[in-house]
Length: 120
Image 1: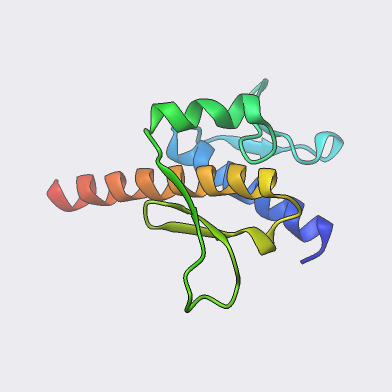
Image 2: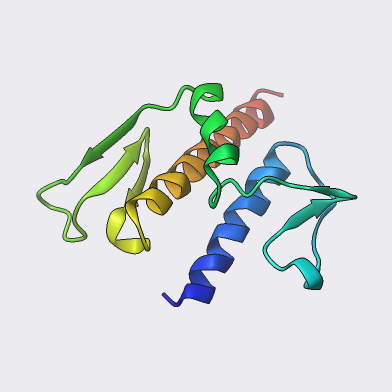
């Protein structure tokens, strides 16, 4: 994956998380590529900034585990619940961890949304 493709995948994850958190008028302006906006408010860069990503750990009580399964040819991975992110898919372990945290929160929120939809 190229640097640009990786960058766009991060922004895409951030867009999905913002939507699940209630931001529905999200824009990315040409002049500030990579920054998502809701109105005049810049949204957090959860996959790219620890100050934005860190609070998700405690807010969603995420348990992080690093392991490598014997049957997995992709090597060591970060496991957060059912979310698995391979370290080899990211430029650094730091970036992989932030990406995994955001991906796990998205999965959690989507699960809650699905349960709410099925119950009501």
